Image 1 (cartoon, rainbow, N blue to C red):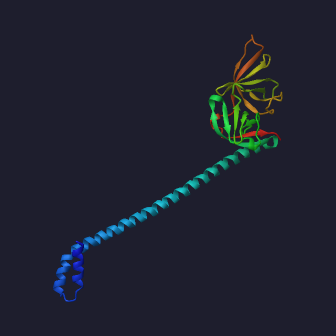
Image 2 (image 1 turned 120 degrees about the vertical axis):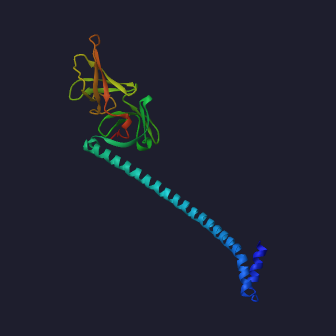
Image 3 (image 1 turned 90 degrees about the vertical axis):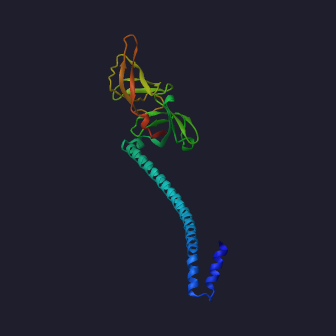
Length: 253
């Protein structure tokens, strides 16, 4: 085939051929020229398509990188907005005037152990037994384990948790104890004291690791028996573990 094409090309270039002869060879070689030209165009188009595909792939990868970068920036802005909102709430409540606070983010929850994991640790100046609260001054628990970059928080509902508390604006004292499973109750309340459903409990000044006045929860059920020297009451805590995102650790001033 190649030989025939070359022969035709050579013959076409010879000057001694007259128009009729050239016309004949044009007629014979036209299909061959058309096929080769079409094949050449298809090959050219194929390589152009590959080049365009590579360019599109690179552009797509660049766009993905930009999108991921924008998503990361947006997530950071949302987090900063949430932190600013929390700090503003704490400021409005006067927490930053009352306590020295370290803002921490919840990075893990273990309901079965009544505990949380936060992203602040020893390098941030945290130590064991520091109180942990929400921006609304609700008591969440205390730090039970400290690592370099994070800490474990024991919730007030843990079976290992107990502290002194009182009914808000009343001289009714008792000991709040955790039952596990996010439940807690107040114990050792004298029988002559009148507890009511809906009473607000706060931490008291009678010793312990928690400062006074932190919100604990409200009484939802009272258990009283004439055969016992003290009465008890079930408590509903003021925080929802499922919604805890950022917390404050009260640090020494």
